Amino acid sequence: MKRLGTVLHAFGNNILIVQGDEATSKGEKPRVNSSVMDKTVKNIGKVTSYFGPVKNPYYIVKIDRRNNAKEARHYLNQRIYVQ
Image (cartoon, rainbow, N blue to C red; front, side, top):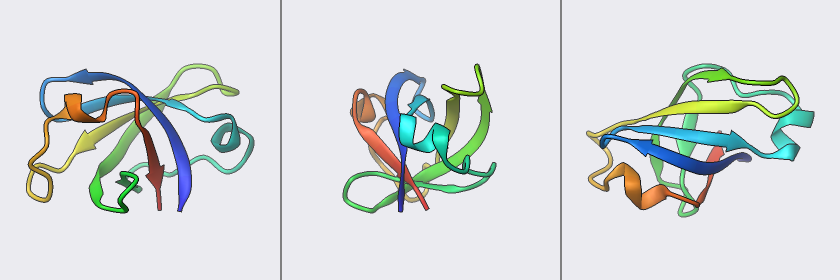
């Protein structure tokens, strides 16, 4: 499990914008459709795309509503992880 980054914005109830951590940007970037987890190792969704500068990318995460009943706002300013 690797750190993906910190959640900056939440759009609606199912989209998160994540600022990638420095550790993630130096290493291998996560692939599209990689599973995303919270700090309790619960699957919350998938990486759908990334954008921005190569050294400090931003990721778009789509929350899987079937497995997660929490609203997207719950994850603001929290670190999330990728498998």
